Amino acid sequence: LVGTFLSDLEKGQEDVVMIDRFLKKLAREKFPQIRPNTEDDLLLFPIDNRYNLGILPLKRAIERIVHNDPKVAVKIPMRWLRFLDSMLSKRKHTSCLSIKQVAAIARDMGVTSVEEQEDALRLFHNRGAITHLTGSETLHSIVTIRPQWLLDNLSLVIRDGDLHQLDEQEIEKAGLGEDVRNTFTEGIASRDFLEFVWKYNTDFFVDLMRSAMLLSDWNFGTDRSYLIPSQLKTVHKDHVQAPRCLFNFSESFLPMGVFQRLVSLCVIHGSRHLEKGKPSMKPELYKNFAVVEIEPNFVVRIGEDTDNQTISLSSAPEFAQRGFKIVTAMIQKISYDVMKSRLKWDVQFQSKTSDECISLLEAQNRKLFPWFSNAKDDEQNSAHEHDLNSFLKSL
Image (cartoon, rainbow, N blue to C red):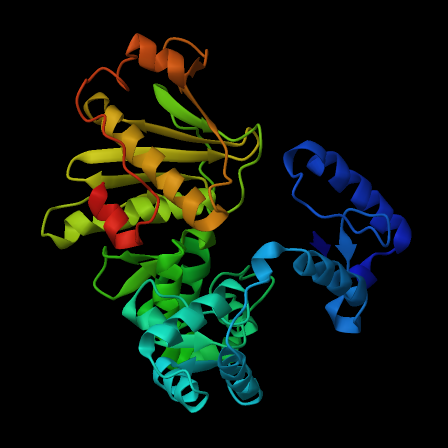
């Protein structure tokens, strides 16, 4: 657990101890996997990249853990190490390599077969030496040898537009003033704006964000655009009305980005039907609330309550059971892909006539209307081992 901007703390170590005490109270039961900073008797590692403060204790702690991890002790051919070293030596001049460049480097180092090259790249990716994503042909075509390049480019569109502003003169000169405002208030980014910030890597970063469920195609306008839910700013004041289903994360926590990814998946799923020529209503989107037609005439309302750590769902009675099934599968997909299945929640239901919350087991036993009144359509979708397109088809 790393705390940055150490030198900005007014009271120095006194502030560090106060913050650490607060974090220990939060993390004591919910996050036992956090490794403490034993050198300084703290939970967190306070650092400041700008002045190289606190970096060495953090580095030593990581090295100790890695050294004792049996999964790291894998024997590999020396030609693989030469292959990796040769790739990383290019970082002085570039942040990424094409798969054709990588294949040429591999052959020069004696890694000649495509299968062995893929095995080596998979190992290097899993160990964090490089980043090589394979969710699409576009992603597979790029090998990132400087991971900071990914963060720098993603932060051009996932950012606080008030705190981290782009060059206004350049934006206006390119005629993209309205595009920028739409991106950082309405969450709708034009293709022109993305090409302006990402240049010739636009297809790669669109695929990267799409595969991470951070972006979805926006098919509700004449120009090619994309929805980035994390950039929605307007807050919806009302909660999803009962009867509703509650996904309650309060026993652990509801991380930032889960609700936004859920919105993205709902819009992607709805767009699949729009692309088939079937009519679809334009989604109603807010920072904490969304109304999306995910299938013809099948509308879901989802909302996030950060105070109570819940995501709520409602839909028309005839679609409630299927809506519960689809949204449950989507949350499982987010948990599996983004958090290695570590996201934990309870499911509860509320009726129109009572504020009482009914547990999932009780609702199933009572065949609670409208969520479990239909005996059919009870097959569960697996979120595991599916790429995003296959997963959405399974819904």
